[in-house]
Image (cartoon, rainbow, N blue to C red; front, side, top):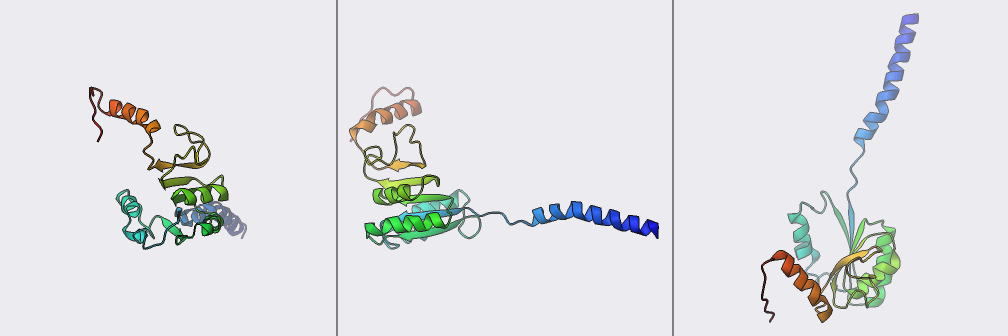
Length: 174
């Protein structure tokens, strides 16, 4: 009888040690949640499903519904809606916000200082617009690309050309 009690205690002790590992192994993998914020409408954004953005995500191995989730918010050309839409994305605890346009980026930046924001489609100088502190080291939680073709960026472009083609001696720009 005493042997069966000891056996029961050992079985319970082993079960208690193994159970947490079994529970840990069962935990679902967290799927990253991407927030997409734009001033436009779904039709103006090429119905996100066919957008170059999603095409590139798929090429990189990210597939909506499988290993990434996307929450889309469109202001439908009503910029005054952007702050509320950005706040919605923050409340959903998205992992990153892709902001398309200067007003969308500005709204996202005002809504959060912790969630990373990727700006795209910015027609202004991001420093002058107050979106980043400087181009070399944006600091804060905003980064991305600008469509600005101002003369102040030509020095950096030439520097990049020279790095890419070290023997470059002449360059023509049309």
